[in-house]
Each structure stands twice: as structure tokens, then as C-alpha cells.
Image (cartoon, rainbow, N blue to C red; front, side, top):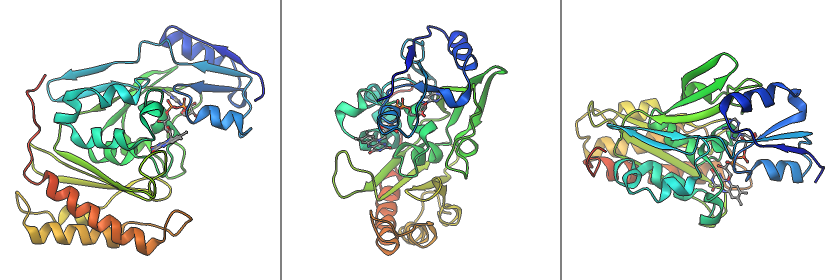
Length: 285
Ligand SMILES: Cc1cc2nc3c(=O)[nH]c(=O)nc-3n(C[C@H](O)[C@H](O)[C@H](O)COP(=O)(O)OP(=O)(O)OC[C@H]3O[C@@H](n4cnc5c(N)ncnc54)[C@H](O)[C@@H]3O)c2cc1C
């Protein structure tokens, strides 16, 4: 591994100043390091300076009524062991538990996963289904962007040099589910991931599929097929078939397009049935 300077800013302003002080190709941002350190070790990047987010006050989890804001550097394990996340946003909890192993989740963060924007990310589909928003801080201040707009078609998120992700907000606790398929259950990348969420107030569904290039997508015709409140068995079956038919899968070494279409339809049906009549459990904090 090539040597680099490691700096530990203690405030957001200090972190932004550290970033600005270096040129883009020479500086890297470190959260949990589960992706970044592999990149450095394998010489995919060779930063001279690494700005660690470790000591920034961004490891928080805040409920405001039904809305949850998660600091970008909070380790995924903290979300996993928070009972209210499991009770009130079960799809998020399921997606977090799909990431790597317990040991990995002690380090990996939500911000790092979103910025990495890997097509096989387990977290992007559920954040899309939950209509989450991302807080970006930079020299111009802070802005909130829907995850849908943050994830771009170029496999790189819409984040300019000098900007950082500070938080992710889920505007409403929703009945939700994340179902996935992979060859090995732990420390393997998924072949298929499907996230579903239902707005308890308005009843509409959002369905997002992962493991597609370049980023997860919503399957709008499938969402529209769920007309009744709650949807009938036939509507659920039709919606799941549409997810299988319309998901833009490709064949690669992790699975064929045909296999993925079949599996995603099965998983989508199960996930929709799981949330059809579910209510978020537990009192609003
Ligand atoms: C063995 C193994 C298994 C894995 N399994 C899975 C899996 O099953 N599912 C899955 O989705 N992922 C998996 N991953 C990927 C990885 O763990 C996640 O992407 C992780 O969430 C990244 O978070 P991090 O904090 O480690 O990010 P880092 O490695 O610290 O950073 C990742 C990238 O994001 C940038 N970055 C980080 N935080 C910020 C921020 N706040 N603002 C701006 N830029 C930022 C960094 O500069 C870097 O480019 C696996 C990785 C490994 C090594």
C-alpha cells in the first residue's frame, strides 16, 4: 500500500477545508474503509492525503415523529441493533443485515455505501423504495436531494469534488421489505435484490430492483398494478410478474438474465405479500 497522510478533522467545516486543500486526484475520503482501503490496497487509487470522517459528529440516529435521520458515518451495525428500525422500517433493517457480515457492519456505513453506488448495493434499492433523501454538505452549505436524483446513470453519485454526505433521511416509517438472492448468504454480493415499501397514509407502493446496471430502478408499471387498497392476490401476482419482465437484468458471472428474472418475480411476490396488510409496529418515538 502506498503511503499517505491521514487527517482527522473534528468538525464539518474542518473536513470541508481539508478536502479543498488538496487536488481531487490526490485526496480521498474515509468512512468505514471497507471499500476505500481495498481500492488503495489494490492500487486502483493512490491518494496522497486521506480525510477521515471518524471524529465528525455524524454518527447519529434521530427520530422526529415518523421520520428517521441517519448520520452518514453511523456504522450499519448500530442500525441493525436499534429495535425501532426493525419494528418501524423493517425493509431497511433487512437490507442492512444483508450487507456482508456482522464484523463488516461494525465498520461499513450508509454514507459510504451510497457514495460507492455499486450496482449490487443492498442499501440503494430500499432507500429508493422508502423515498429517502440525502444531505450533501459542501462549500455552498447544505442541500437535501432525493436518493433517486443522487444516484446517477453514470455509476457515480451526483456529488461534486469538495462535497460530503452528512446524513440520510427517511421521511416516513413504512411497511417495507427487502428480499435478496445470492450464492452464499454471508460476504457475497447479491444476484438479485428487490425492495418494496407502502405508504401507510396514502397506500401507494414503491418497488425498486437492485443488481441492475448502472443503478437500482423502480418498476413503475408494477407499482401501478397494485390498484386496490389492499391489493388483491391477482394484483400482487401481476405486479410481481411485471417486476420479473421489466427489470433490466443482464447475464454476468453471478447469474443469467433468465434466472434473475425468475427469481426477482418470486421475491417481489413474497415481499409484497409480507407488507400488504402490515402496519409499522411500535409507538412513534
Ligand atoms: C467482504 C465484503 C463484503 C461486502 N458485502 C456487501 C454486501 O453484501 N452488500 C453491500 O451493499 N455492500 C457490501 N460490501 C461493500 C461495502 O461494505 C459497503 O459499500 C460499505 O457500506 C461502504 O461503507 P464504508 O463506510 O466502508 O465506506 P468507505 O470504504 O469508507 O468509502 C466508500 C466510498 O465512499 C466515499 N465516502 C464514504 N463516506 C462518505 C461521505 N460521508 N461523504 C462522501 N464520500 C464518502 C469514500 O471516499 C469512498 O469512495 C462488502 C464489502 C466487503 C469488503
